[in-house]
Length: 346
Ligand SMILES: NC(=O)c1ccc[n+]([C@@H]2O[C@H](COP(=O)([O-])OP(=O)(O)OC[C@H]3O[C@@H](n4cnc5c(N)ncnc54)[C@H](OP(=O)(O)O)[C@@H]3O)[C@@H](O)[C@H]2O)c1
Image (cartoon, rainbow, N blue to C red; front, side, top):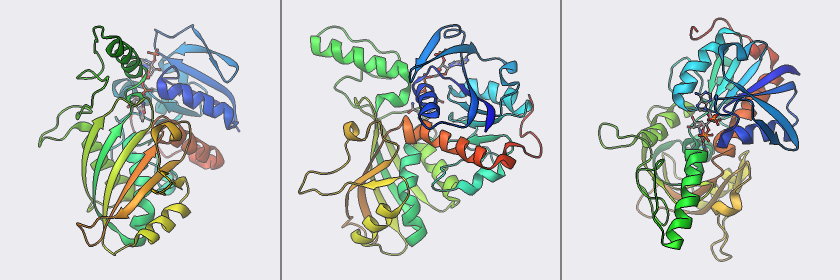
């Protein structure tokens, strides 16, 4: 049992679910402290029948806090994480800011839990699109070594936060009513549309979101030789990211092998019966902590290729669940709540 866990960005799309999950999973902390910006401070927030006060994020917010789960934009994480680490708080961070720093472990508990033990105050949780893909890759990589992955994503609007979800709701209502639509979060109108750009342009023509899938995958699996080609697309779906994934392995795996390996993997559910029209769908997977896989078939264009379809709740396993699992590991291993020296200075 720890004294206090803080949720930074508690009023956001991910933050609200983290608070709800800490209560539902009876997280062993005496107090849950909710932090956000000036905009939310002083406003009570009701989660799971419990009323919380939201406090403004400040350096002193972390006095006496053993673990903080951060769920804020990158620039906010860059500022607050050093405040917390300097006060002895271990931060589990959802933002992209620290993920690729060499001293920061990037962790999916089902895939590389041992990396948590190497932390020096900060543990990063991966990008939501990366997490569900790597969950699927891990058992296949262990059995037959993954050489190359080609992935196309169909990413829900909730991945862009609360403002993005509002933009789709209002935009869709306006589109259906034939009224004027507006946009501020997405680069194009999202209603009845597909947007093949998530994140900012990077040299070579990829987007920042696509490169996260390349570099984070290699870091988590500890294998720099894995080839990843990602195309990330925003779709007008409320929640749950879907991915079409082609996986090439060194050793051939049959469809039956893949089905068996995935069905036995923790946190993965296989839903795969085309005749019965059974495959994962965003609307049926929403609200679950698992990663769902279906449409498993041979890729006839490659001697060792497997094609599959993967859906997962980006707000849960793609974010909140993963971070809460890491926090639970820390509490179960209290020695990991202290470390040699801070990774960064305040
Ligand atoms: N959405 C997903 O599926 C997902 C998945 C994986 C990772 N992530 C990452 O998780 C983070 C949060 O995403 P989200 O979707 O939850 O975004 P969001 O809905 O926009 O929420 C952002 C949160 O950050 C807080 N915040 C913003 N500026 C702040 C400031 N200056 N000081 C203190 N708090 C501040 C907001 O507080 P106010 O309400 O007071 O503004 C809000 O609680 C991002 O880094 C995102 O990339 C998101």
